[in-house]
Length: 202
Image (cartoon, rainbow, N blue to C red):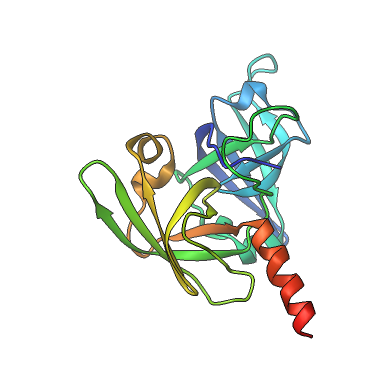
């Protein structure tokens, strides 16, 4: 489980397909604090550390493996060497939940429809497919590339968020361009409510 508060930006340094899987090598200053079998969210996608790279006493990178299901439903399959990813380690029990409950289970990908410079913040609008569980509400929460953000405008097929300078600079959002794909995880509470309402109607 995660909170959507990004700790670090990692960089993809190697990609190695194997069967239907994709091994991804990442460099990050978080590497010395990681261990094999640990969960790390990469642009909001929970992946397991399977190897550490570099000196044993001070690793400089690590490897994760994405299976076919992950490659089909997230942006992972489109990553290239040099791509930068938002990183967050799993939440520590008993710590502050500064963002919202993020599972690291990407629901779908969205597309950057527009980026507006507001002279002190940025308004980013994301379009996505319409689905009964792809729900946003104004002032609600959304995980965008693993980052917990507050929804400003909401419709059945789009939403917008405002980014403060700190978030813009300390995530990979500053590299976003119109037309880019992003990973979306909708609020788990909203998804449960939608499913319950569907059952009640049935």
